[in-house]
Image (cartoon, rainbow, N blue to C red):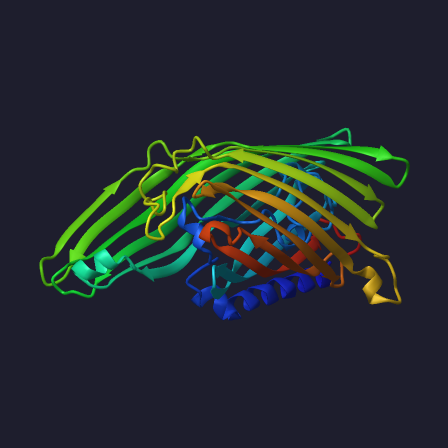
Length: 441
């Protein structure tokens, strides 16, 4: 008992020191970087921890007593009855962008999640934590090339930039009935700040430059319910069915908008704050099925869907991105978001005493998703493959999870931007037996 807690504390301390020592976590302006994050609340995060991400983000039908699974609140009951578990993950995002003959690249790093899970009573348990919901990060510019404009007013440049993100804090509880049916409910609180700026400058000092921007401070409550049903197939294998529903979330907070011009001609400023009525995050439905063979093999397929078309983000100031579909400024519109994810886990022999590599949990996955927006009427899709592994750390179920995600989003047709990305995630899976009485003094 004493050794277990001491080991657990050492791993927690190592995880926190790593987070504090990573310059990208503290000094990096952006949690993620993509021009597509100019729209609405930005780029939505892949669900789950490094454990989930290494299997393409599945988890709706996943149950494991070794890992925290925040994708389905019903999964919190898959645990040893006296176990205290925690997960802390970091995420690094590496992208290469292409638009026509132009290329650029970005590298960012950020916290992915911080979650703890513990039992309540008999077959019930709780989980609390925080994880990103979306990230906004972009910066680009261009020169006006219309000879009529240049001939009349001189050179004109345009630049846009944005940063910030939305986080979700959550608390979930679940209970299992008849050893097969698990139900879970989760309370969610979204909060965050997003800043967007758009600037036009004139080389001719007779004309004023124009700048406008928005500061979004957003909050919203929501809830999520989930269920899982496990049907044994013989003595060692089983099939698990899972489903989730996340409620819509009406956004609160405010949007501060400003417009001003500076130059030799004059200086004017307009600065005002307003609420965000009529804007919401959509509900989401998910379903999954998994097959498990003992403690050796798990295969899962998940599907999720959410409809953003009625959320109000396509017309509300501060959310719309660029409004004019001319001069390189594109028009976004909300759409229906869908994803299909498939992942697996394979462990040669968790109890092998000779070869360490046989105790490693190897994972992989594939996914396809349709983003929650269209760009100039074009659908934006993303697809990729994931690979990963958990390196066990004695004693108990402690481990270090490493995941990789190779994928692509968008295309180069119609002068759009194609992203090719290679992302890393690392998670610290922490496990300890608490609330256990000593047999001897």
